[in-house]
Length: 117
Length: 114
Picture 1 (cartoon, rainbow over the protein chains, first blue to last red):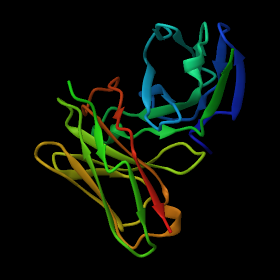
Picture 2 (picture 1 turned 60 degrees about the vertical axis):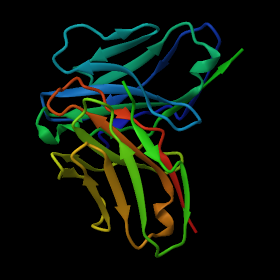
Picture 3 (picture 1 turned 120 degrees about the vertical axis):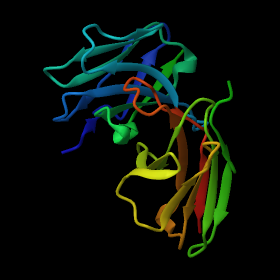
Picture 4 (picture 1 turned 90 degrees about the vertical axis):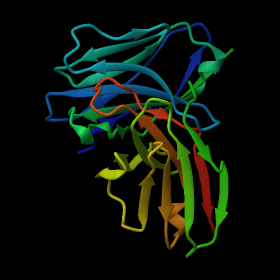
């Protein structure tokens, strides 16, 4: 089974509207972290937001928020007030465990977002 | 604070050749990881280095090898290049043991094998 699943290969969103990107994960480790990264066409991976498995509240960073539903193993990213510069690939990723080997991230297949003016 | 830098940005090699990619970690980070990203896919973990030793490896053959230097810079070496090795290679650095520490990525090296 895939560890990170992003079911939306591509999405269109109107400028200034909100968009939700889906991410489901699979792990048996009770300690894990979930990350969202943005990758513009230039190729750089830009860190957006982090959610820990023991965090009680949903993470927020500016226009980005994470809808974390632990029982359903989902960690959806919400981008509010979309801007043209938000057009990019978005990746959900998971880090399992907190040991020295735990700096490995497992990525999903990504969702391409195109913001329309 | 300097970010993660990679060189070269683009590279074209012939099947069977060897290639070395370089990475300078972000200041203060002690772990470096390498990822391969094929076109249209998410990055795949190759391996990571901590204290100059390989410390975790993904599903990649031994012809993928690496080094980490005392200044935390790193190299990825790929021997006997195959056409399927064509990809964007990303280097990432972080601080080991900090569970909420995000990986900081470089801009990548785009390798084309012909």
